[in-house]
Length: 591
Image (cartoon, rainbow, N blue to C red; front, top):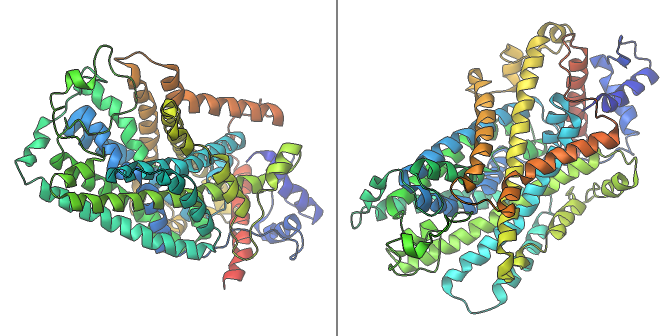
């Protein structure tokens, strides 16, 4: 949020007779006048635009997040790192990346309890970091979730090949019919969607627990419990040492945790503040525990040198391939590369078939949730557009909601149709590399958003601590962390460990970006690999520069943390305004 958007409040404050003291040409708006200002900004009661309707309960938000996180990665991605770095390499990777993800979730969960605002990711970054960076973060976050839908449909189509179906109908179903059905589901009122994902998320949680327990049972057969004794190793294909293999695999594992930050998207549609607290406190830690549980089941039941494990992204070392380096290539060939299915198939083929069907359900549910997050993110971005030029006026047309359900119908269809073509690339084998690059780049885009959110939290904490006295004098002392008033809003049990969580998460994300270069530590880098790994960073920087150029803000970088507190007070009041008035607008319609 730059001074331009805050000036909208200032102009109206002058018009209604505000007598707040001017600071650098900007008038401080007393809290008592915020209600009057909001009326002028939004127009008459009849003309006010509609906002997303707060109808979700805490358990619905919890399972929506579970549905988003538990998809392909929970059951398949671990197999890639297992085959690359061995069982200990996989366990250490899941421990490290899970801690980074949980720290991110803990930090975002605290922010959404304090400021429950629409388009929260954008607003947090705009208020405490830089508005131009916030626009880019919002675009990249939307891109991530919009591409997850076709990626999950590709995974579902791949899983169905387990049954050796000689037909062309699977692509038709998963590339068109299933996404179209999910689009229809997202057009219902959000509480209906919430119930659908509550059932889906609960079933996925049960599936993950049951599958993990079965894999623990499988590990007791034929001496499989000794599989974990292989320790930290390397496959000899992508890395020449166990340490390099571990570094190679870490970025792959962290991508499985995408979605732990998504409470920032769903929180505004909660019925009340208490419906935010429970998922904000627990969901990221529960996801961490579930992922670790299923990973342990995989490492004790699947041999790390099984040739049917999926290959990780990247080129192999020159002169080496699977046939010459893997002594287990004579094992029976399987029809799947999922580590969980490999474990089940060795015990009972019917059980493996059932679990495969459950995995397809899990993947499809994640795709359905991706529509929810991408549509809400794009709606928030288009709603914030001012319509000052032809491009922004065109995108502004995507913001209207369905009168009957309150669903952002245009952003739902836009997100589906603009990437509708992605799954069909799979029908041409030469396009497989393109799909891998898009999948990796979209995931790294989300990690960039994680980093921006951590920076936003750290700057918010620093600024409010610096201006504790002005905030207290303005009646906003509750926004200073670790005060009694703050603890009435944010209920985090581990609050005293902040900003440790945010610093650890930010450092961990940067560390992961560095480890992404492990793709070519022992191999030759290709243009596709470089773009997949560092393309999102280059695109982000380019977009920020372009936005600043066209908005005339190239000379303004980062929100200045002024110690007098007046700019901070205005920003907090603005977030209060969009949280309270916009929430109440549609809360009355829920009843």
